[in-house]
Picture 1: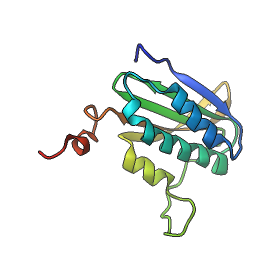
Picture 2: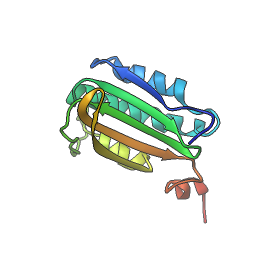
Picture 3: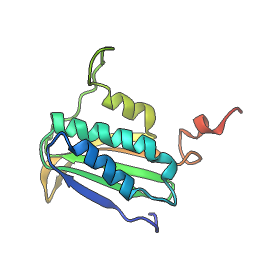
Picture 4: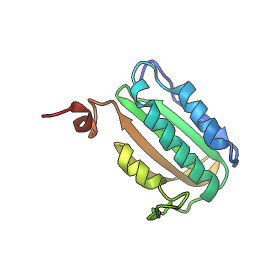
Length: 144
């Protein structure tokens, strides 16, 4: 665990303003010592997941963010137990790319059922590793 930054959580309403609030939360909560270089990807992915929770999930929506010293792990929890379904977005579709973006930009991601003080639901999570700490290291390392 990171000794600089503690786990942060934010409970969000089921509202079209929630993705913006989640991005602001992620900016405020990011670990300045370990994870600043991951912030752009984190903002995009947390926005996608919160948008999915608002559009396809159920309340409550909870965003949790933590640094482990080598990267970030972000969870977006909602009150719907139905698992997200990846779909093939057409060129002119406004949605349908969130899970594909998770696959392309994160080092790991998944979905897990949850039962906690907020009730039952699911959490979609992703990890972003520092450039020298994960599978994406090859992409950042330059020519071999």
